[in-house]
Amino acid sequence: MEHEILLAALASMKDGVVIADVSTPKNEIVYANPSFVAMIGFEKDELIGQGTRFLLGKKTSPTAAQAFRKALGNKLACQVIVSATRKDGSQCWLEITGAPLKTELASTEYYIGSCRDVSSRVEAIETLLSTEIAIEEPVTGEEKGTIDPMTSLYNRRYFEEYAEREWLMMLRQRLPITMIMVEIRNLDRLPGVHATEVSVQLVIEEVARALNGILRRGTDLVTRYDDSRFVTISAGMGWDESDVISQNITEQLDKLLKNMTIDPNIRCRLGVTTSIPDEDQGGIDELIEIVSNALDEAMNSDFVSLVRK
Image 1 (cartoon, rainbow, N blue to C red):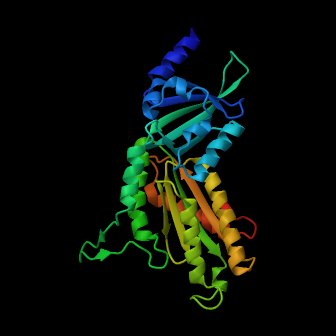
Image 2: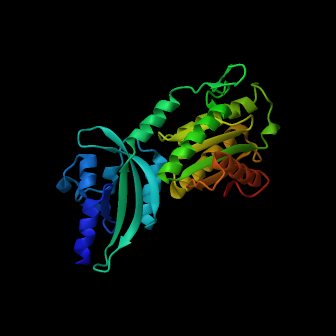
Image 3: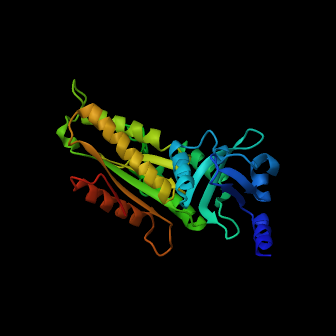
């Protein structure tokens, strides 16, 4: 009776639900509820037996895919945003909240994923990113530029406006938001402008390019926060995926800096924070303060490259 009630409950859920058998080599899908069938366009019998890789579309960021595979392989809870390909070939964005599932009826271990179509949110953010935000001074009405001229990234003004909206959106939806602040330690050892040797400007440009290559989801924003710091914000990015992203940034930037400068003391440092917005918190300003403190702690350490708070 309990088994029948559970199946009826899953079938009636508005969110898509997929269950995979993680004991099989490709984590075969063994159940998909009607909402997921309608969401993705494939019939139920076309989904059953497919591996979970089937869920990852061509726009899925490598880090999201890696976090999803890690969660399945290690039987961990996760929350990631991935692209998926519908039967008609169109792309959609799914927010997958997954967790291991073990029943008393069988020794087989399963993984259950609740899938929500967030395509409209991702597309809205992509549209926003393609349009520069004009910020006006209250007295003069003078428009302030929002692009950093050295890196062509958005600057601090744009970031603060954008981040506030993302915070409010995640507050309404009760979803996590991740902020990463990056600084290069001992960058003052280099000359300030382009010369025959590697310069601060060249390093800043290459770091900006690398960060843009790592954070490629539709909901990721990379900005140059000030002369020495970059800050990224990722709506909907949970703890598992942000851990993978942060480690990836550390490894790639340290490799880049090692190849560019040869100086072992010039290395990247990261401050990271992930939270689900709450009305009792101090909003985006509090998040910036937390990630800044985490970065300061990392910058003052000779041994730690990354601090999470």
